Length: 203
View (tube, one colour):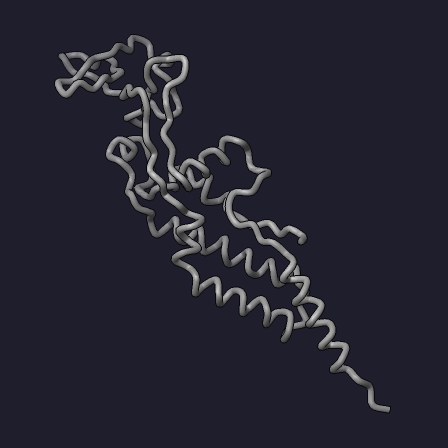
């Protein structure tokens, strides 16, 4: 007796491909990340203007010594205005020299550095290859829809991380460069970069 193995396999492939179509793959910073990281991701993806609230000015750190701190953390800090009209928070180094710690501004505009949309726009061919590999996973390797979706998610997340590491325009400002260890936008501590992952949602 000849056993029909082709028809069940075709049915399996059809079922898994249909299930794959129903899945949604979310790539980026997921909703279970802390609110601060989600806020930072949103600001960089779309750009934003941050304005001072309940105070006259924002205190922008302009030295590594001031990073993550406020003017209140520095004993003897006082303010001076430059010839160009910029207001700085400084401490006295002696001999008429100052240690410039903060630049005070009423608002700061952070430019758009789209790392999700930008990476997808630049990586269309790579995504197409990932989708083909996902289909091959089901058709040729007996994989499931979720396994195929995971393959797409992994490649898309890696593609986004690679896009960040290549450097995203516009470059960091000279002020930001004074307080960061990395010259690449979106990569100072590496926390945002390392938090890029994927999530599969049932349709």
